[in-house]
Length: 204
Image (cartoon, rainbow, N blue to C red; front, side):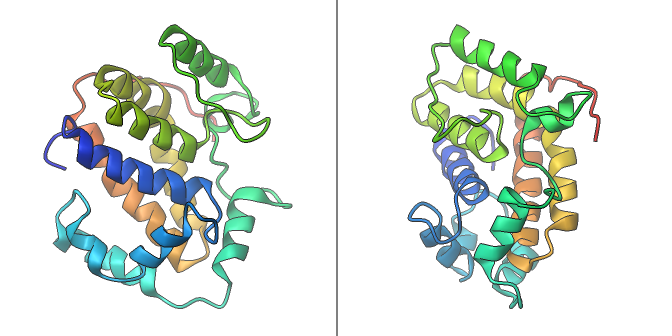
């Protein structure tokens, strides 16, 4: 991405990543994206140099013995402990709990900025996927200042550690590739962000 102010490109990539991290791969939100990423056509659409993306593109197409839906269940739902929990407070809270202080801080920030983001069920708002979807929505509605704050204060402080663990422990080529694509994309956002990323202690 040439610069983070390119809201259309940002919103596109944030919405794709957010949907794939949040929704099941056979859902109506994610299934078309899974299909797209397992072909080569998306390379020219992604706001990064296509040459850099080729290894990731090959990984998306790699075969696996584990069905993609089962991999998603294992990585995001359980029943066993998740290899890389996708909620910010798990990484930012000393006790690694859901609905921790960082979640409450996010809720306060959302209230102060008149942002209503309803979750599908009683779950924390600081899920990696939902934060990306929220960032996309802010970009689509010309709220770039709030988008940058969301990234700098509530997502980027912990996402690098989360994505490193997610990619390492994904255990499926598609989700390993998704983690790598997210690493590259968020690093590009960080490099052009106009406000400093908050330094926060990570406990995982």
